[in-house]
Length: 149
Image (cartoon, rainbow, N blue to C red; front, side, top):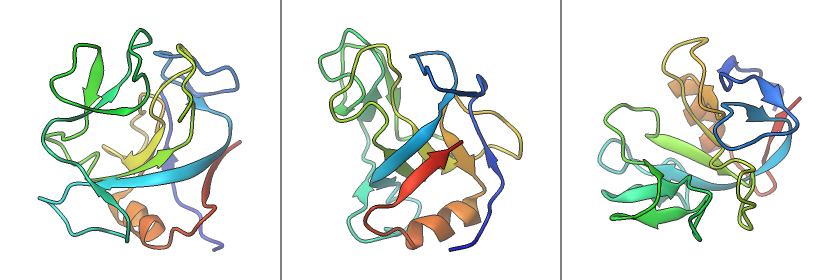
């Protein structure tokens, strides 16, 4: 739509050979396959968005059969809690990076989410200012992609 937004990327920079734990943002075109949001903090930002409930986790353990997927608590493998105290995942756009057929070690959960502050790196995701994230989310259409050059 002709708009440019400042963003933060992974502390490991942009890489073509993304690996679990490297903190890098993977280069390429990544389909946006879902929208997660905190229903206790805001209304659904778009039709079809999935609420983040207490106990929603994302597996980041390469030994887990559910690696790089949304899983419920309790979960016996390493994971990231999606319902955070901070606002980073109040809205999270889920990309198809290493999903749905996850290859262990290739990296998990590349989201587009809210940044902490300008220039503060992520663990590999792309982060936007809250109002920019909202603007993008409200205009998502089928076939939307995150392009990392």
